[in-house]
Amino acid sequence: MKPNLAVAVSNGEPQFLEKSRHEYTNDDNKKANLDNVARGILYKTLDKDKNMFSKIKTYATAYDIWEKLVQICEGSDDTKENKLTVSQQKYEAIKMKDGETMTEFDERFSAI
Image (cartoon, rainbow, N blue to C red; front, side, top):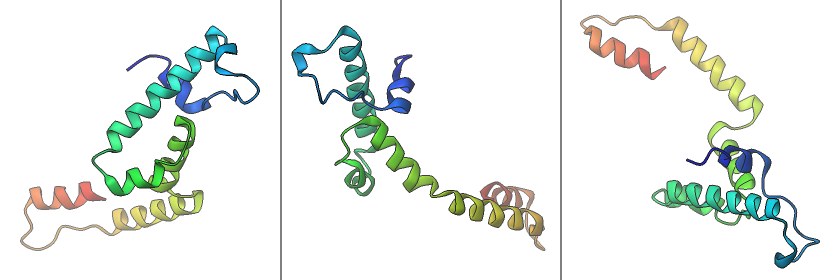
């Protein structure tokens, strides 16, 4: 992975609306290229998951794609808080069942 890729994903593609392609500076070209690389990686990663890919294919920048993926996978702050609360309740309530092996218990525990 290229070292500047995270910058392209976290900051999004620069706004070039007032420039034509031949007016790009070297820095503009570099940022646009990083965005293309990041989008390519995201597309290739999600290519096998047609449902997920269909949700992000209309977004123009890697940043926009990433934000949509975060929203889909993690949800809002309220959703995250609810998931954490449910996980804490499951953790506090977990007990080994009669006849359950340590391996089975460990699998249930790890699923929390």
